[in-house]
Length: 237
Ligand SMILES: CSCCC(=O)C(=O)COP(=O)(O)O
Ligand SMILES: [Mg+2]
Image (cartoon, rainbow, N blue to C red; front, side, top):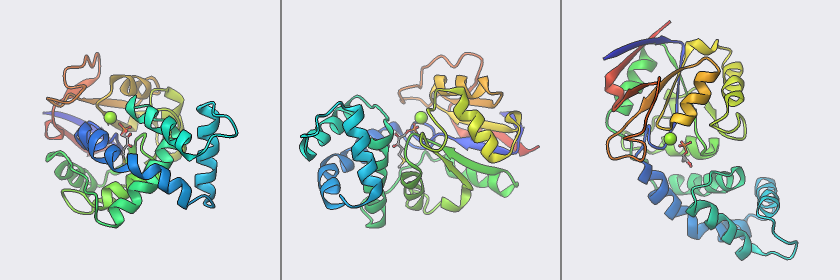
């Protein structure tokens, strides 16, 4: 057991709170057939208009490209697990509807909710930093294997309001938004490159080496590495 002290605990989602398959299989399979119909049905939503414009630009599509061409680009990004902002925006909207309609439930690792509740009850503040859009994050926590856990989190960050997860300036932006010195923030993630970026900004870091997950055997270098949230305690600074 390793004891840490901090003011904020910031958590990644995929591979940290949920099995990777929850995102790559359950959520991606739900979004895939719904992207085209969503774009066509919500063509007057400014968020969708902006996302489609970004996809045209990043996918180098000609002006004549229609929804099937846009969907082909989106499916290509999903197949390569490229977490590109306009894709994450559209996925988030689709998942928001899916959770609201009772189609989706987020499968959390069993050690997650007890630890988050314990830290929250001790007075620590909790936040999320994920490639999934803020709208998708909030929806995902509204229906989980442990019920609605949205009230545990007081802040949400994604690649739009913070920046790319593998770049130190994103962590600087989050620390500024949290009004906290970086050494008072603990970041938990399964991806060593994300931990490197957070540590570069002075954050405390904890790697999730969960058995059977893609980064279960990864080299976490100088970062503390654990298999379960039950292996650390975090107390208010
Ligand atoms: C509804 S949240 C889904 C999370 C997601 O879309 C994703 O890509 C996970 O990325 P993370 O940065 O949490 O590893
Ligand atoms: Mg992750």
